[in-house]
Length: 156
Image (cartoon, rainbow, N blue to C red; front, side, top):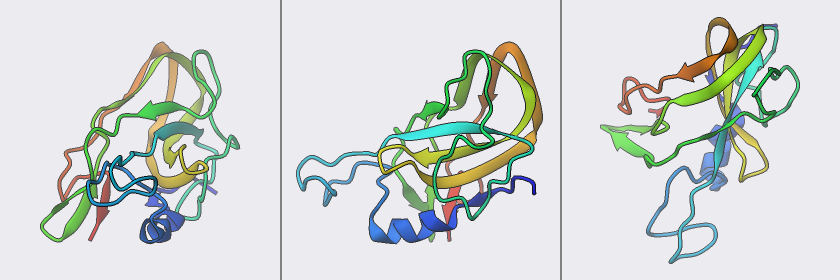
């Protein structure tokens, strides 16, 4: 089975349960009404032979890449942009590109999993791209424009 791009089904229901906080809110927070928090997100890369998709519920090291200068669990995601709306669509995109610096990843990979490391490594979304390998270089995933047509997460 191949990796398939999707917003994880578990993430959709967990949003309604209040399990994820992708930006600071001023009205209410899980931890305090006066000191809102933002969850920490991470981005892990997965082999082209993996089977991640809509049914992925949490980060797992199974099928994750390994190589020089790549740490299991991936890298931190910059979340300076809070979720918002564009028309009637809820949107969110990380505020910076995902950069894996000076890595050697010699086995083909084609997927990044964005997950919430603050909340028991719960999966958010699986994003696929063309199969890649990297030898002693930087691998960068440039984030799309944060609007209703391009945002990484779009909930209509």
